[in-house]
Length: 339
Image (cartoon, rainbow, N blue to C red):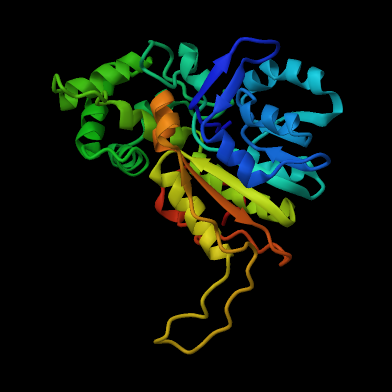
């Protein structure tokens, strides 16, 4: 799952009523109505899905986290055939849906449910296994930290985590793990704090960016995002709406570049021979939306959220082009089918 946190919850039947960031803006962008069919590719706690259902639409909700699927079953029972909840990666959303849909919404990041569970290893606020796997399969964060070369760790911390001292941290961790492998979240967090130090006035823990980089790498979050965008392109009807909410610049850069490129080229550089502009697969993207002052004050997670909208044209979907979204610059596990 790649659902962003950033919401409040209320007690009630089924999963807690989750109100994700930019909910009103998401609904405005999707324009849900009776008879419409939407894909919520990042179900999480069901915030967007519930709002779409209440507007009369049908929803195909997807999540790669089996915990989210289990906690969402009461919602499925409540809404009957109006909601289909599927355990899968959202990069497969077109195969899951089968038939063209009216809209796709993606909320990118890690869910508050995952952060709150120490056993998942996403946060160092509570000690837990150094895991971070959304599906519980594949390489864990401990595997990465304890086995990868310092140079590779530095790229993960520096590019995906945007950590300025990535090289220094990676080299020190390589030395420290030789004496004792890192097993828990606090093992790693305390080690990073020891390496770089921490000023009393600093509000952000020095390990925050290291954890971000590891989580994105372990779950191939940027690769999944790129594949999901191409999948959405294939499954949206003409006039269908693609809405993506991101929480940091790495994700937003991919979304912005995808929407801009798929809106059609400009015919090449004025210094080169004229070439025919590519047919627009999406209309020119709308201006991005950020949270207002009230929402940002009520929910700190909303402060970094940004919504982008693109509307599908009738032009046939193009071939997936991962260079188009700049994916090659990001360190990530080898993805099947991209070579």
